[in-house]
Structure formats: structure tokens, C-alpha cells
Length: 128
Image (tube, rainbow, N blue to C red; front, top):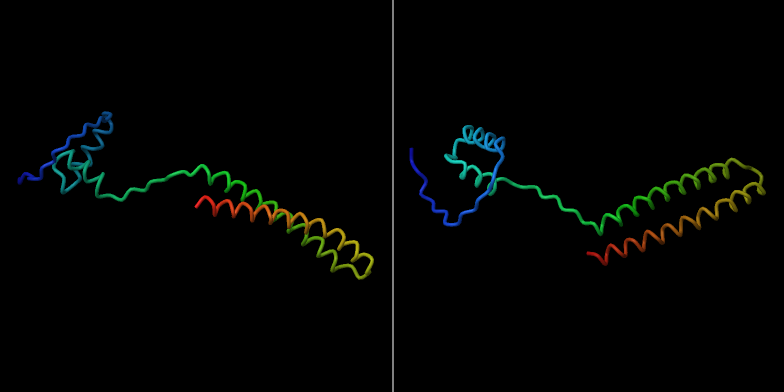
């Protein structure tokens, strides 16, 4: 069997539990290219793609607030749709005026929520 001739001048020491050592030895037996545990560890570390998850805490608060705003806007939209449905069901003009007056506060609440949404989006632009 031919020995590898690569030189690795820098040493790093790591520690394993007995179960981790057994897993490494099983992997080493199954691996075709690696002859030592060191080669196997280098193979795993440097030749495999790693997925790294990072967490941005500043964006978490914004995302939670955006979710709450979305839920509120959906509820307001449902209310507006219900009132609009009743509006179209009424033939009497006085009844229609009543439903229009009922609808105006919902539009004002919706406008306030949309303004809050715009300010959140502007805040996001500042972060990036």
C-alpha cells in the first residue's frame, strides 16, 4: 500500500467521545480513499459542503411585527368584505348610507396599519 506524501506542518488536537471514535472508525472502514482517521476528518471538514444557519436578532422583531400586521390586515379585510356584501344586498338607499358609514372606520384602521407597514419597510431599508 502506498503512503501519502503530503506534508501537514500544523497540528491541531481535538477530543472525541468513545462513541464518536467508533463512528469515525466505521466511516474509515467504509471509505475507499482515506487510510487514517486524520485523512477522514480532513475529508469531512474540507470537501463536504456545510450549511451554516445564522440568526439575525434585529430582523426577528421586525418579522414578528410584520406577521402581526398581516393578521390584522386580513381581519380588517374580512370585515370590509362582509360589510360590502351586506351593502350590495340592500336595495334601500338609506340602508346603503348606513353601511357606508359602517365601512369608513374600517378603511381608516386599514390606512393606519398600512402606514405602520410602510414605516417598518423603511426601517428594513435602513438595516440593509
